[in-house]
Amino acid sequence: MSKRGFISRYMLIVKRLRSKPYSSFDDLARYIDKQAGHLQLRDDSLNMGFSLRTFQRDVKEIRELFGLNIEYSKSNKGYFVGEGGAGNMGFQRMLEAFDLFNSLNLSHDLESYILLEKRRPQGTEHLHGLVQAIKNRLTIKFDYQKFWEDQPTHRTAEPLVLKEFKNRWYLIALDEKDGKAKTFPLDRLSNLEVTKATVVKPTPFDAEERFRYSFGIITPEIQEPEEIILSFDPIQGKYLKSLPLHESQEILVDDEDELRIRLYLWVTHDLVMELLSYGAEVKVLQPLSLVEMVRKSYRDALAQYGQTDG
Image 1 (cartoon, rainbow, N blue to C red):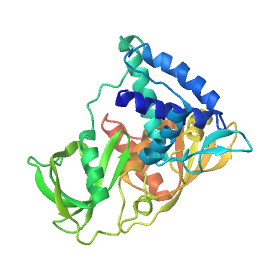
Image 2 (image 1 turned 180 degrees about the vertical axis):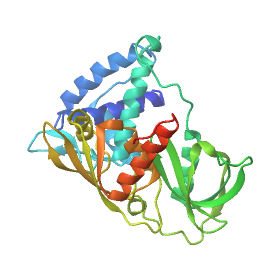
Image 3 (image 1 turned 45 degrees about the horizontal axis):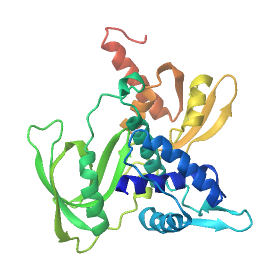
């Protein structure tokens, strides 16, 4: 069987157990057989034979490849994804990508069914090498092009963590030049080289803590996070409840007039730009410094058209 066949079967097993925990082997076999039929419609070379012996081997492979434990519950007479596995964010995104790939691969004429954003890849070709460098604590070298400079600069750095924000990927790395942790957008990296040089004394780095109060990628070194209170109109509020602005989001008021939320964040340019994108659908209530920043942005925008807010 092709590698695609194996991976497809692994993904289907996990998808089934996430949506229908405590499925019996017979339930899984029927599901795999049905889904295999759909997949084979567009790839007749795909063979996904499924037996109890195959399933037992798959369980081992899924654990080794994805770190997910598939267990059997005697009381519920079925299989399930063990504690912590189903909520793994990395694996959730992998399943999302699998669903997307299968949906796109299903159609011969994509434009009739799916409208994709017309954008080029944002440096994702560097992801594999950088992940390996971070895991193995290897020094990297690359050229980095700032938007406001004519020529790229050559960097040597210790890679620390990768972060995604608004369809872009960023590398946080310790720049050898000054020993500071900096953020590099992957789409502005070129000539990436993962060296064989191991970092002698790896830098202690807590990514969760560094970005705990950050909206986006900006992490001020001396600024304290602030309590931010925002009022959204009730329609926009529904979107905010289904997709919170930040993990710190707390609902204070939710009625027919408004959704009022509280966040605990650094006040940064990324945050201001996000609030401006909501236009009249949001009102900043506090802190006053953020209120003034938003007001100034609107005054400056009106001035572009020869108008003021009075």
